[in-house]
Length: 343
Image 1 (cartoon, rainbow, N blue to C red):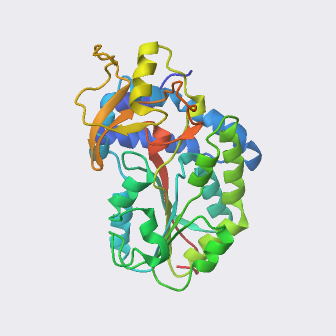
Image 2 (cartoon, one colour; image 1 turned 60 degrees about the vertical axis):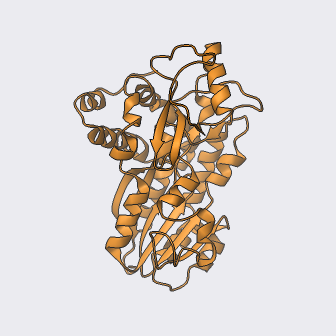
Image 3 (cartoon, helix red, strand yellow; image 1 turned 180 degrees about the vertical axis):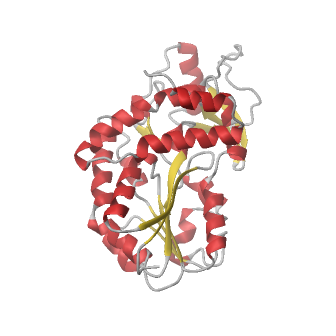
């Protein structure tokens, strides 16, 4: 495993939590925004994930306390969307691609460039905690993703006045849904549907990477984008990312593995009312650095697995997952687009 990049380490040593999170997210963005060939999608997916491992290790060990400051210091997606929506006031569209991570960023940037779109902003933003769908929806003032079905958010939530839809329909069908209503919000189930479909054993990250390049470079997806940018400015973003947990090292210490299995089953976070963190079952003293951390989040008191860890559990640990504390679970693209003559 390579070490933490020296420029990043130097930046983090003297940074405030806000500056540290900005540096960490920018570093991840630079790694994943670099152009790719569709032929290299599968190979690059594994290589780029592996290259980010030292940063996740740093965040889970020497700098684990940065997660305590995450909600206050990281630039979160939901507030960014609300601010953008309120500033624009009209002719707005948002496309939320569920679980879109920084891995898929190159295809969006290349597709936009190839089709002549103007990119007004392109930056990383951060998911709610836990990095799941419902906390993000609640941060937007919605009861859940389903509140957007059939125009449900027009009178509720923080993104008022839009026609809305939540669907996993093919891109062509989604494009036909977009009418001349000035403000639109579409929440689509891809790639999260596939993240869960591909949670079993095998080279699933490579399969999803190949699929993502086909989707996000393909004409059907960009026809939907064209419809959304007809008379509107568009933001493409996500509620959370995902982790390739198949590449995580197994926890070798039996007591630590038992601790994680008891508290998290095969997941990455769990609701809790406990006041301690990192102690083994049976009242053993805590581990330093801790295996997990308890946070008072905006969405409740929860315990989270720190970094890239997995353990043996009944039914097996999922190959792709989200909800814990690693960069690719929380960092997502935030792209604002228009097209000449479109908006």
